[in-house]
Image (cartoon, rainbow, N blue to C red; front, top):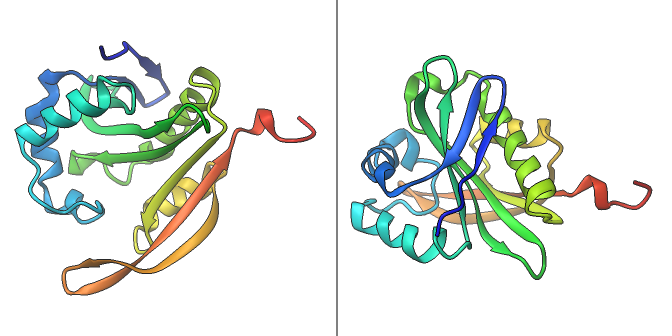
Length: 181
């Protein structure tokens, strides 16, 4: 069962993903400018997405949300908290903007802020982390702007398009649980 979640920001709102979103997700994920920043770079299919929904989203291991622009109620991207570990109270954050005209508009920071609130205040997680290609400057900026810290640099971790790519690990602890709070 996929929980019904709606989070609202100034420019965007996030709603729970449904199976009806499959074709849109597959189209977005197979765009070169989206694939470029994903660690998994193989073809993304309807079948693989539906398997992800059954095995990861429906089991609660992933909370996946569709990003809508409020100005025209248009779906423009997807965000998720994945590998949710309820024992250690942590999850990995991810996002992609599937509609090219919506990139570079500052909505990434807002999407991240909404997910931070979801992770810490609703899911009661202690830690959020992300893995980002070192050359993905917009994502790195968004994470740092929202309080994440660089925790590690994994050198030559990915081999993409004939070259090795470094990966940055970023983390954020729930500020309400830090000493002195």
